Length: 373
Image (cartoon, rainbow, N blue to C red):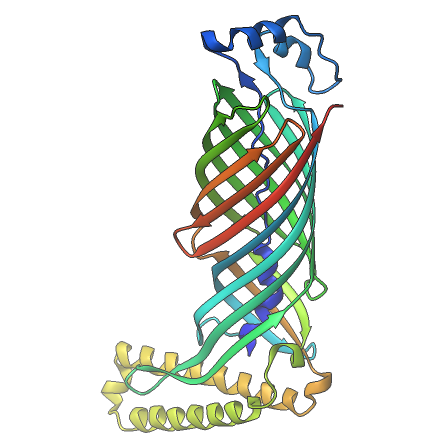
């Protein structure tokens, strides 16, 4: 249950790397001499990028200086969660980090974004990000407590899945370099995902180096680019929020799970008390036994107090709310990406990209239109 209070925080992974693979290319080679000479004598007609005319006259082929991209992005990523605190109906917050274990937590998101961009400098692209997303969070977790032998067992389990709407905004920049059709791009962006159940928008930072090669096709301005690279996600770790209990808990079987959990806590507490009372004074003074006794009592008290409070909240479930605080992170910060772009002409490009390896899978498809400013 409390796992599902984390749902809003998981929107942090809606961070999208959407740089279009156009770049300022140094024209080299004898077979390209005519193009290189034409660039040198051409009067550059646009205000951007800064120093565009000087760079063009040195033999560089510049893309159109402004663009607009529409992208669809899908991602499924595992996350880790720790330092969990949960409360109900604005009451006390309970530290559950010791007794809650997460089996598998992941966030799946489909997003549609619009990205305007300009080439501020011949080798520097800057852009904005505006998007709508529908994240789905899936969490499985349980409450674990020790017995008299310090063996931990699960006394209650919860699996949750919830859907949300999110609005994302941000900006990014991409330094690039290209020579003879080979290129290197270092894409980076910062974005904020705004969700009603979060106290503040979730922040994320993306870094994505790419190394690629563009191959000319028969028709002028038509080419295809292929690349490989990496995708690194950094997210703001601390998340606080407030959400309706009915949105995070399956009320059909919640009461039974709470009742069973309380019974198991009571059973384990009886075992611990019986074990402790059966020890001699010398054995009770043994630091190892003292540590086991204190750990068991602390964990059992936390579990019992939390389940009792949850039991009370279930009596008014339709009006109850959950407050939570946690720290989260991607299970793996890096994954591998491959991609391709077909340039129909210098105005229109189509792009696809896939990311895999590690605990994150992602796909992107996009259409870009470019023009001069």
